[in-house]
Image (cartoon, rainbow, N blue to C red; front, side):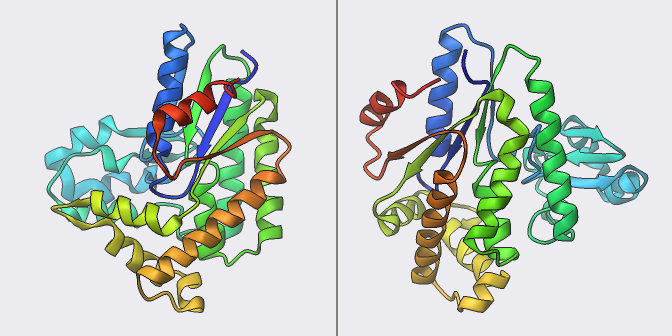
Length: 276
């Protein structure tokens, strides 16, 4: 095995989850020990969709939720004096719990950016050091670019050069794993988001409405006057363009695969020859 880390990236609706699972299944059928981390999982390098609570405050914060504390504990890991709670994996009809946990994430400028950068860099470095000693393949979906470009671009208003430097510093922590990055690009971002918006509607509301509201309330959204669907499309077009510039500056193997048609057979045929 030439690589111990595969990164799967792309804008929302590009097919990252499906593609990452296909890669994991491919290696598993070969008998390779494979670890796939998707959005919301407890993650060895990232902290998106995970709450981070100081241990000394844990019981007080969770006191209102004793009815399902066992489920919370099952989704809690202890790290360096903090409880990391994968709260989206906890099943409850108590919306206050999810809001309380969301407020204790590290993304969305909830902690000062220098602290955020140091924390994420340290986690990636620790992961890289540990993974180097294992005969295992790890697959990260959206943990490298998506989550952090959102933080840098929308929250910190970072320019492209700043982001290129940030991601080159970050990828340096895992270079001994010979990482390979796959990016599922979209020729027509509007068409992709329109399609996925129709699919992502539930009893809790519309995904696209939540995304519009989220983007509008970020520093980037306020600066650029995001106020509806068209503004979100333009922002995602800029994000994809920025991510492609970042990718081209990385000192690792990268593969940009056009996936607007969602033709999985054709995509997989192209991808198989690129697998490490």
